[in-house]
Image 1 (cartoon, rainbow, N blue to C red):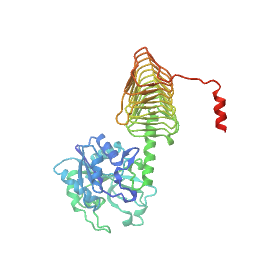
Image 2: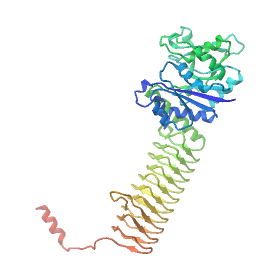
Image 3: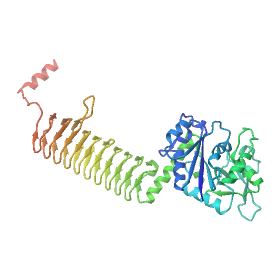
Image 4: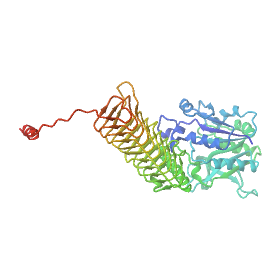
Length: 463
């Protein structure tokens, strides 16, 4: 069966009160529209047509996937929006999903099941429905219960304002997600009229069009009604964020990850985490990060677009666009900035910043240091307060520290400079020239002591 999809993403989203199109507002770090595209790709939809209108240029710029954009220049209702996409379905046999762009919680398994139910029941159209204990505001699903099917076929979808008192008692509601036989959709859609208060063409009216043409219309009930939650305000955006975050955390816990407090742990959808990893409260892991097995991430750590090896310990630190190999210790209060690589068994201690640098296997930068644009070899000890002076006011320059070297405390390494293998740099030095291998470098003024001068100086200050 050939599968197609039309995503309705042309609305203004007035209640969001934002210059950003509603469908581009992120849920767990990914725009709503992108969530839906990703799920359609998972079920092998042949062509995805996105109907855009409000801030169309911003949507085109944001979505990089191979989709077909069509523009609805005037927003005259959902049926009118689908009508804009019909030229791309002409002469194509198969089934088309129609889905609103503000339902990021829908699961790909649900969409696949909807398509399977649609095909199995030989329906020409099928609406995805949900049971709502408080259905106010939703379109009600009216079924013909005289059929042998215990659920009956769908005969109409009645909007809240048009519903009779008895229809308002119905708890089965429209989710705005449909499956259609292409040929029937193409023939039926132009028959929808705009005889309503808004003078708009409603896609829900296609049910009556199909029924009047003796075309069977089915309804598939969602097990989890939250999947069809539409987002129209910042409050609903927050609610969707909470639901998706709970799903993500549950998935990781089921895969062997310990999350001490899921309610305060934020993990984005594309993150991969190995088993036996423990995550403490207040942790934020975003982007396409990959976390290994047996990792311990203590509270208030932020990891973005980074790869963390096995059995790493991270305490209250920030790691961005970098790689940390196995058996490394990070923090507390370390900052690993983009394009850094921390090799296995290395240690980056408290209040250390590493930027665009590599730290070799077994090397240690324990505290209060800045390593920027540097290449540090293996088994190097960098003393407290060491600074790689990488910027001359115009350009960045590189510092190279070769294997087995020792850098004393409070050292300035003025780049470009190379410290040779197995060398020593005395504490308090400012190194401006290369240090040969096996050498001791001392670059500081000679100390001078003035006996008995301290009391005189203190007395002078007091006066």
